[in-house]
Length: 322
Image (cartoon, rainbow, N blue to C red; front, side, top):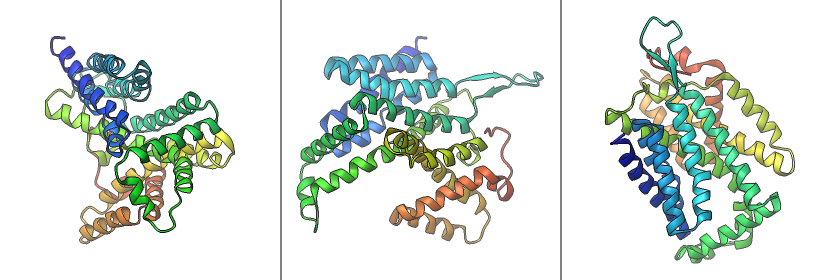
């Protein structure tokens, strides 16, 4: 307990500073905002849920004192509660079913990824109701936010204005239309990256209790693939229902892209042309991302449905979970 509380307080201060940078309205602040859960994940996975909860409360108090109470409330909704929930699940365990050993069964990491997608979609639902409370109100709020960001980014608006055929209103309209899907997908990936990095840091410090197998051995449930297909079909519905379904489908698609890259790494192992294969894959991902992302997502979806890594890759280690 003597160590738990100070670690939690330090994590909360760091998280509050990263999250509070969003108030500046700059482009860099958005990136820092997405890093705000990292100190909490390190604290929670290494020193327990109590430590993370202490940090979240401390961060909310700091945000309330130095910014506004509303800002602190949004911190609790967007960062504090989701992070604490994932930490709780990640540290959840039970005695082994056979009862013959002292080993414990930990909450599967693949299901943590699924929960990350669910939480990301839930945050969008809350955001729409808070800022809307309908789709038109939400889009108007996003339009004002983008105008504020462009205005407060030095030289950014001038640079855009110099582009041939640039239409500010049309560009903002496109960003408002694509923002929900991109933000949910990006939140899913960055939150999972923060969770993963937090576990790596906690393990390097000797504080991570649960086993943490390589990312290449994480397998999501088969039902996740069916859920993605169902919500993708529902995304064509009009209004908020289509928006929310599309948000979950996008979060799942980003997850499948990540799993597709992992699958490519695994099944290309031992191949003489592996450096060329991976180099080409990442070049396509960087320079032709919008064309290559569906291909990687399809590969991840195929791996989840058909078990490509299990069929063509090396056998998993004993600590891998689904």
